[in-house]
Amino acid sequence: MRSTLILSLLLIYFSNLITAQSFVIQYDYSKRVKKDSTRIVSQNTFLNIEENYSTFFSEAPYLADSIIASDKKLGNKINFKALPADLLGCYIQKKLSSKEVIYYSDEFDEHEYKYNEEPKFTWKITKESKEILGHKVYLASTTYGGRNYIAYFTTEIPVQDGPYKFFGLPGLILEIFDEKKDHHFLAIGISKEKKISIDDRISKRKYIETSKSKFNEMRKSHIEAPMKRVFELMNSTQIYEKKDANGNIVDMRKLLNETQKKMIEEYKQENRIEL
Image (cartoon, rainbow, N blue to C red; front, side, top):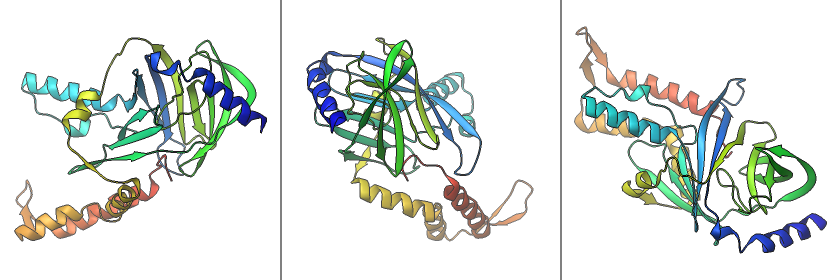
């Protein structure tokens, strides 16, 4: 009860300061590659906070665009397999005044989707504290997407925002991770200068509007049959055999079935941030 009262008072105190702030926070995002794996991978992510909204994204799409543009300029063949993989698979914009989150998918080949969400974070604030980047941060906890999270926020930067979809604390979230540390965001730099932006990439792409529940259904269908569209195209052309580089006949149905089985197994082990 006391922690709820403190949170409410702090939110009221800082509410008038939010729109005047403009920051760029760089987070190291680390995640466990597979559910039962010990291998951890990491990537730079950025939270660009403007006056009225914020955008959270991985550096991977920006780097990939730069590499592709450079290869085209030099006349080099683009090696798509060598491009950096996006650990997030999405871009996220927040309208903090309306507590609205806009999720832009970046994980499908043929179509990309977007949906609006108003997540309800119930935060429990404690007196436990430490320092991150020279700022005193306080421990808070919440649950979201089937996971329990620990967060550290600072009231020294009065912005009610954080990485991924997280927001609503009386200050900026500088660190947040789930209890198993499958997913971990840690601020490693704060600047007033925007280093990179994903706004152009979002504005130029055509996203299909949907709801979160329908998006999750589409993702589930894709995981169960990731090669469905390829099979449909093959059946429409009725071309089931091709010659390989050595002139040998390849059964395309068999090859695609084997590929799909491997993809399904990989999806089963995927360590998604939302369960």
